[in-house]
View 1: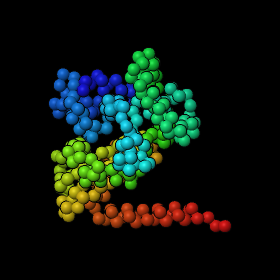
View 2: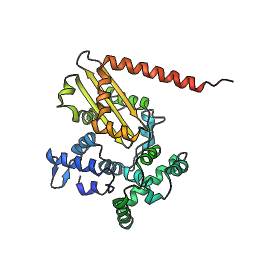
View 3: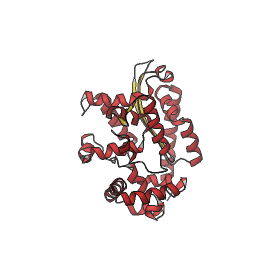
View 4: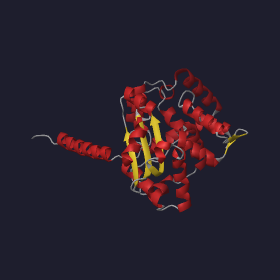
Length: 294
């Protein structure tokens, strides 16, 4: 893959630091040769950095892809299929839309199919329409998305969604090679393992560990699996921290607190017990709030 082709999907001032860190890391590890990176190294790099520009390049080169058959194969009733980040962020940009985030959510919230087409069209225009791309890039360079941190967080309501239960079900299918060949499953799991293979804090507690973590404004989530050194038990998890207060989100994302928490939740009996109690209490509180006196 030519780096110039990946760079074509990079929105000015939007996640640029992630992209730059990813390319620097790949270069330092000898993965870049004469301005190109192999598909295998690119997919490994994606598991380290979740670079939106690289994700977009891969998304477009999968097209046309039968996403509906994919959903049916893995029983993903609620999970929405991926979309190109460039189109997603352009769809919430004040410069492009000239509407409030609340208006955009009202406009597209119940028209998910139309929104999907809208996002794909914006991404296609950004990459292939030189005049539009130049104008949009200039606006983004001057004003980024034109949204406050809180507005950008709230706009994630429009982005593709999944649920913890369906994410865990899909990851369990990978671990067990259900409905997917063993070689293909192992390839995906190896991408997830790659960032953690040489870290002492991982190998101390796990004989096998892999994860994908995501970090967007006000949102932190992760999907991981771990086999414990002590018991040989394997656990699969999906944990979402959603709609976080912006100050707390900056603190959590800057210290990787959510990653440490999620890894501990695999092996720490005290933390597991505490979270089970919190979950039960929260469920009871929600039930009590829903029950209103006559």
